[in-house]
Length: 142
Image 1 (cartoon, rainbow, N blue to C red):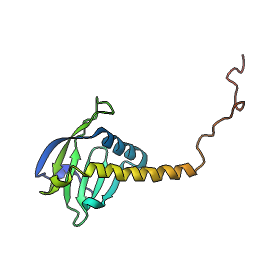
Image 2: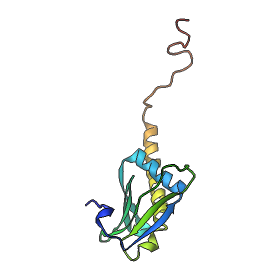
Image 3: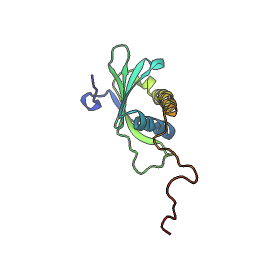
């Protein structure tokens, strides 16, 4: 079942910032692994659906929405600057989890990226590098 944070009324909406390193690692994972990822965060007993526009956390027990990070304001910022966003809380205990979830998500995605990269290392490269003296001469025709 897909979840659209606009279709639920949050208990509370907070203005927050996501650490730049954390946000950038999650964005890199989305760029390399796919536009929509489902990530289980076992220590918090939740599963997160991660997309460019929003990150949604749901309970592993009964799949109710817990919280969603939305409205990321990434335009005009440096890569080292935190990313302002909104956190929408849908469960009364979600505020206890919201501080840990982005970092655990980034760590989980780092592990996925490492496995993805190690699989790529085993493949032959898509572009074969030319050795000195091979290929067309840059001065041909001169």
